[in-house]
Image 1 (cartoon, rainbow, N blue to C red):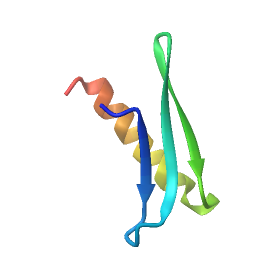
Image 2: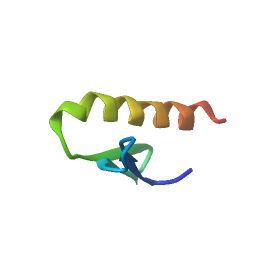
Image 3: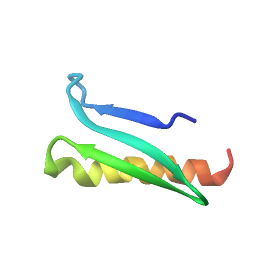
Image 4: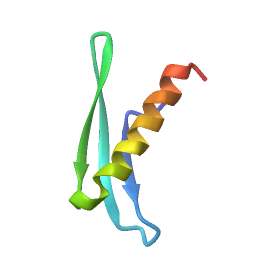
Length: 57
């Protein structure tokens, strides 16, 4: 699974970057969101990534 992600909109504009840092027993995600109004969508994306990782599939 990748550790760094770029999220773009349908026009290819950068919405956010996500860096996953592995710290001991847990992962930490560093979010750099271009517009505050996109924060909820980016957070949902990161939660989906983490849920997939934790499911073991």
